Image 1: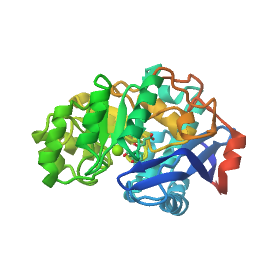
Image 2 (image 1 turned 45 degrees about the vertical axis):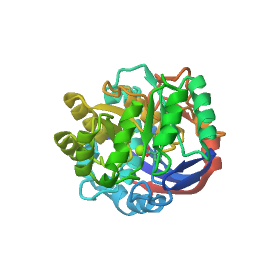
Image 3 (image 1 turned 180 degrees about the vertical axis):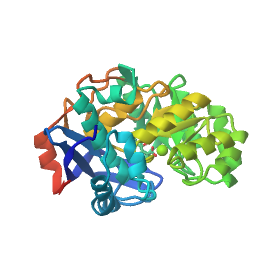
Length: 371
Ligand SMILES: O=C(O)CCC(=O)C1=CC=C[C@@H](O)[C@@H]1C(=O)O
Ligand SMILES: [Mg+2]
């Protein structure tokens, strides 16, 4: 049966992070993004969230390109095609190359609507089974090693199951060695956001001494060939983030042995349907996966939680508590983490209610599209 989508709402929100988040590219303090809403004939409402940043440092998409793609191309494709299942969007959106984050923002709202129409939780609609998921925390680059150690100490005491540290040349081996010596039993990983090249191979090999859980995206954002050379030269598992946009990329990375782990971000791969396909092929090939974060507000966070209930998400994700990011989130209740664990909500769809007042307060622009 066709999903009778009657209307789309596109809200642009602006929210301030509690703490600035610094990577090898710069610092984010204010987050701008879209909340998408798909409404059917009976008034059911499905919600999605976009993850592109205001400037294209993580990938080529931005808040502006997301809006352009949704308004001028993607909604038209939904108007022209019948959608019976959210997976249909894989074909419907095919004429548009790339722009995965824009596609995912709409697809997420349709997945939520689909699950709500069936009156089942989104995680169940996706085929997930876990009732609880393990989470870790991603810590941005800190002003000093001392500050970093204090921050880690705080999160370890809070119960987070693994700590991810951002690294870049000049802020890597010594810092990680210090961290490991203070927290020898805590699973520690490093994310380089493509700050190195194969010329750094000797330096990167030194990280093998530190028994890290993994090193994420050490080399170029669009590379899987050099990563395969690096993985062959290192014991530490390489995790790919930026380089994996699709099932096909995943299959090629597996074939080349470019990594042992994949960080699945729903937005980066174009939505939950593709994320699920990537998960399935990783499961068949013994590649561990985990769910990365993009500093999401509550709706995106809820989607991440639902995805993480799939069985191959065997490593803690970045889906930390709402309160670490926002003074006030846009969902009710907010996402809470106890001893590094989130209890997956059992309500229909994303499982959290929208805080309508908060949504309104953070909205700076709104547009409605009739189908
Ligand atoms: O807490 C989160 O949402 C994860 C934050 C995080 O690590 C990242 C967010 C955005 C872009 C990147 O720097 C990064 C990552 O690469 O995984
Ligand atoms: Mg990353």
